[in-house]
Length: 378
Image 1 (tube, rainbow, N blue to C red):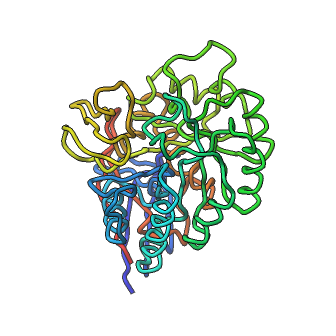
Image 2 (cartoon, helix red, strand yellow):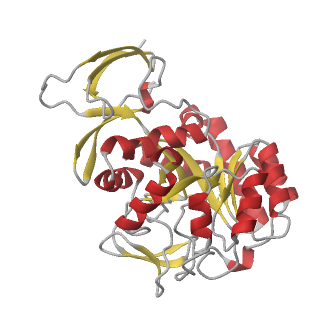
């Protein structure tokens, strides 16, 4: 039986935590007031990312998606502090989406650590807006109205693994689709939409409970009011995801949106793609086609002002958000809140029984969060 001890400061209370673990799980937690112990890192549950298209060259939307891709992505994300993530597949032809589901499901069956890291799949599209701006980098040729038969085919292909579906409520029959999806146990998210206030309200009444990367996947210019951003911000039944990388949302916009929604109804996502973690340059990507990663980390559809996903990992988003709010609030939006959405424990604190593989330690100073160490795998 592997045993060990891990110590660090709790970001929420400032207390020093001494964790003992055996056979892969925490067995005891001793908590003591901080006493100026030098060199102790921060310690907390691993980050939870509900929107990952890829990272470090591993692409969930590529033609060469394989079980090895999913395993490699899981390992790469763990190296940057993400211990739980939701693979996100985007708008594509029906056969390709089903194949992606089958491969992700196979990776979970074959690899217990992948199964532990991946609670479900997020399908972002194809039932989204066909308008420039709200559609983002999604392929217009594959955008289509909500289809319950197609959703059920995804679930058959994945063994019921689809946990989040992003849909634009502007389509006729959207509310009925949302109600059926929610009744099947899947979260419906509003995103990549040009829906009006009444259509958004009808979708929420039907059970939609999330907003996908709110403030993005939108027109470059909107009426002051009403518009679909205000409608989602004002709706308390929607929890909102935000890409906190400094490119998708300006700092003032991010602060205002989180204040409107409330920290407890906000969660951070990376929206990272396979180009993430790589050097600046021109790349070919299923998300956006030919894309450019600039020196400052901005990922663009080449020759346009449109973003093609994100390149920064979630830890960078936590660091950026902590400058706008605080470290505990930023971590709450990257651990507690997304974990609640996927049905995990709702506390931000470590508990006896927690998998030690889901614990991270890190160094922190304003604007910079650096992983110090990974807890051992069982």
